[in-house]
Length: 211
Ligand SMILES: Cc1cc2nc3c(=O)[nH]c(=O)nc-3n(C[C@H](O)[C@H](O)[C@H](O)COP(=O)(O)O)c2cc1C
Image 1: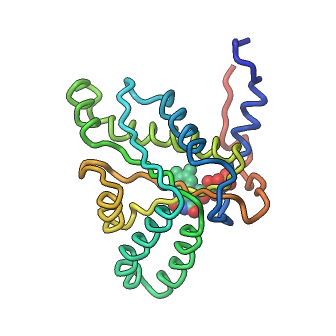
Image 2 (image 1 turned 180 degrees about the vertical axis):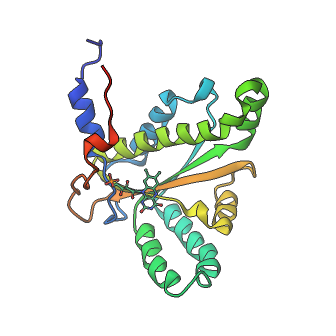
């Protein structure tokens, strides 16, 4: 037994509650200060390889979130309009829906931290980029889960897949050139029922127990 006041099953139930929620409103039932507090708390304890802490977060709220998505739409348009028939027609309404959320948690990896870690730990230098990805994933799921337990819906997007978007967001959010865009978590009050857990593979395919 740990000294913690919640049980393992309660913690698992909380983690299980996190879902991808696309139907979002551009409203918040809590203060911006509370949202900031949640993100700060996650950053205060999330693990990283050798505690190197490459993750950086830009928290973008309210009108600024809408500006962010206008910028994404503007930067992505020229790329997606020539990416194949129907690509832009299917993506643009999705982007507009993301714009109609309350906020974005933008996850970056700081390249200089990764380089410093590679110098400090030469034998495992080739692993630090991958470990930075693991660490941001851990921060992402913690913020995602916490915001949903707080009553928001959220969905995770990878708009850095479109290079001009990453360049535009670096400038918009005033982050250095060595920051690599990892993910964008859109959140807001829910405009749909909370989804069920989607179907998973049979457990015998994904878990092997040795005893
Ligand atoms: C690493 C990772 C990348 C993902 N990227 C996207 C994405 O770019 N766009 C999106 O709509 N959902 C994305 N998702 C959400 C998944 O589609 C979703 O988690 C999955 O379908 C399971 O549903 P759930 O989140 O409700 O459990 C991503 C999830 C993970 C873990």
